[in-house]
Image (cartoon, rainbow, N blue to C red; front, top):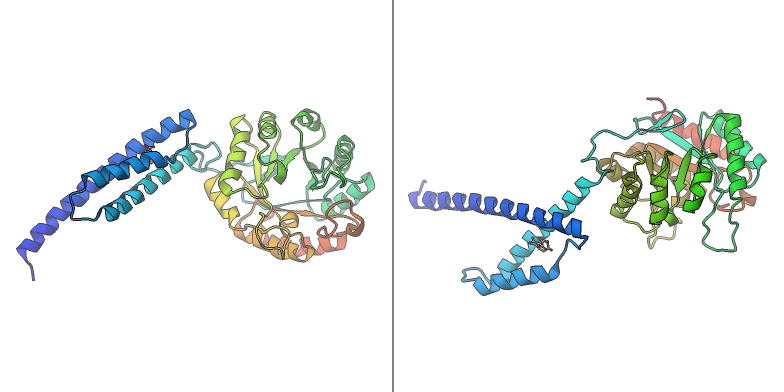
Amino acid sequence: MSNPKLTELRTQIDELNLQILNLINKRGQLVQEVGKLKEVQGTNRFDPVRERAMLDLIQENNNGPFETSTLQHIFKEIFKANLELQHDDHRKALLVSRKKKAENTIVDIKGEKIGNGSQHFIIGPCSVESYEQVAEVAAAAKKQGVKLLRGGAYKPRTSPYDFQGLGLEGLKILKKVADQYDMAVISEIVNPADIETALDYIDVIQIGARNMQNFELLKAAGSVNKPVLLKRGLAATIDEFINAAEYIISRGNDQIILCERGIRTYERATRNTLDISAVPILKKETHLPVFVDVTHSTGRRDLLLPTAKAALAIGADGVMAEVHPDPAVALSDSAQQMNIPQFDEFISQLKPLCNLNT
Ligand SMILES: C=C(O[C@@H]1C=C(C(=O)O)C=C[C@H]1O)C(=O)O
């Protein structure tokens, strides 16, 4: 049932579609140029005043048959798509971006290769309390083949009256234990001025959730030759988390491990809400290894194993969990740390599920 008139009209529509396509892409290129200028000037990509002026111009020049409101709606969609294009360009330009570097970054911690597809555990007490306490946990972890030992020496606590950590003394204990058991030490640093000193004692600088946007600390950690484990902020978006990592890499240090540790939501059944989908998103968007801290995200001992299984299944490079010889008397986070038999059970359930040696 071919109708020559219909065919002719459709041919014209096809031509116009191609012209519109061409114009939209040309427009997109101009917007990209504008985006670059804005980047240099440090101005906001979204410009509602400019958008309003363009919508007004459309109103002034509209001769139909479309309603102005319909056209303005279509143009608003075009503005939105263009804004997204500027965002994409910005993301692509980041040094941590997978688009900038396709292959995984391998973080080498005393020979432990993080990011090559094998999965790892970081184990240790929340706070360093004594040599004996850390040594007991290290012995148990080592027995299970764990090489990465964590422990908090500088503790950024919610209340100034809570235990603040042993400071340098705590780092010395960690180093002594790690040397004895041939393990690597991960410990949080909260003050840029402590980084130089900490280099002698620790193998990985942890930047905690509360300091994820402490830009001076990020820059200081980026300026040294030491792996950094960067935790996601309590209320940080994935974009903000990625930009925090960018601060570190922009100073020259690409040895960064990202750590999802739960975010603040309305849900109170867990201490924080583990954002498990952040793991594959971060793996896709960046070339950095990603860990999941099951202890802080859940705040519940009974959820450590199931969330660790989820983390390993979804492709995390490792799991961080806290272990204390006697959690009931721990100076911090006593409700969520495992004791040693619980840790043995935890690790033996997880080992068959993870990729231990690649
Ligand atoms: C291109 C710009 O940036 C954004 C994108 C716009 C567009 O698609 O035209 C308009 C305003 C901004 O929200 C601009 O400011 O000119």
